[in-house]
Length: 325
Image (tube, rainbow, N blue to C red; front, side, top):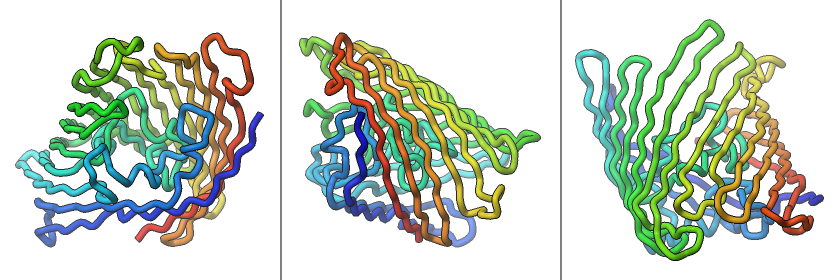
């Protein structure tokens, strides 16, 4: 059993410098995003496969994807076409983050204001890349939406350049209990990832669902299911997560919220049999400032190994502060 407390990590994210060309109806938009970080937190010393904090830390904002580019995370131009039937089509070109278009979730998607563990930020089954060259289309019509994008990634962990593509279909529902979003996601890559024996290179392919739904004025729930093909070497073949969000309006603190989630990962074709993640947090909101107390329990099980050292399990306690402006 291990108990770990986060070391000091300083991370500054300038997330939205947006310059609309038109003052009333924004048809064109430029966007630039920088990220700066000091230290890598637990990411370098954690015994678990999954990262306890999915933030972009020091190693993530330097030499991004082997492009010799530091700190500049995203830079893109978008033009939105509006049609007579109230549908829109947005076309974006530049340095993109695929998670802005795929695998969204209202209550489990932001490592700076919601859950910290990567299990509740995005599904690893899609191998979603960030901060590289690409183009995206976003179509909306009433409650329906379709996002599609393609990206070229400088290099993966094996030093190979590869292409990524993804598509998401979504439906936004207004029900008697509140609003909800229901999404189907599919994503894949070119053949640039080694197979389990390391003798050949294979492509990645993942598919899944991401749901979020308000239950009443205080409580909401989320579900995320994802699977991936195991031709390439992959730690996990499936991911299932679920959780609840409680709005602070229920106890007179509308800027606060509580999140509770559990995730199970089924092992792929390497030495991981399964992983479990539990996380709960309380975020206090004060105007533009948020203070979060976070607790996690993580457990990895390796195939055919019984030692405690190789099957780490333990608690992680963390504090997080975020400022939005």
